[in-house]
Image (cartoon, rainbow, N blue to C red):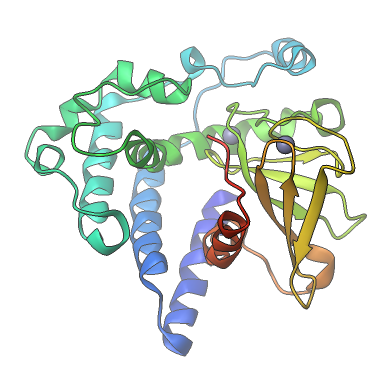
Length: 279
Ligand SMILES: [Zn+2]
Ligand SMILES: [Zn+2]
């Protein structure tokens, strides 16, 4: 599934490049997808030790299927991807600022320790040595893009065992990540959230803020574009926002990970109106 998505993303990007040229952010993203493609070939399918019963129990109790201890990582391979991801980031200073020398010099991969990966996975503060000279948020994105091939491999293997109608929580049923994009499906306009970490998709209530949980209709509203293809859901209670694409309004193939990046104007608008993506 994600394999094909990556290939289709690369194909779409090269079509866009021929037609109108690629904005810097998408040039950067293409390089990241290529790093992920190479990693995916090395990783293969992950071994899952969860029984059907354990999956049922975790889902019922609201635990994501993948806790840090279930996550089988080859640290050497992870560090290799980390070096490649840093290299891509360091070639786009206009997007991210200068990457500190400490992260670019030989041996820098040893800063990415198991402890650091665990802290990132659990949403805790990253070790100071790793995030020296760089914001915690940017280092978080670098680690996320480093671990993405592994997270996506687990997501591909696990997502079908999630009983969607029984989950309906605000965090990812596979890895516990928060959503950062959503779509309304073609069948009945149901809202599906997209995980910011592993790209899993899960169904969620239309009238509920996925960040603060309010169902108060007077707090929830949305902006839309002329074609009503895109919506910006906003919450007056927690000031969070969520970008949504309404698949009922298009027959074109939609690549969600790409849509997430191509809708930067919506992020700008949301911030201008005083909303933010909750951490
Ligand atoms: Zn996830
Ligand atoms: Zn809210």
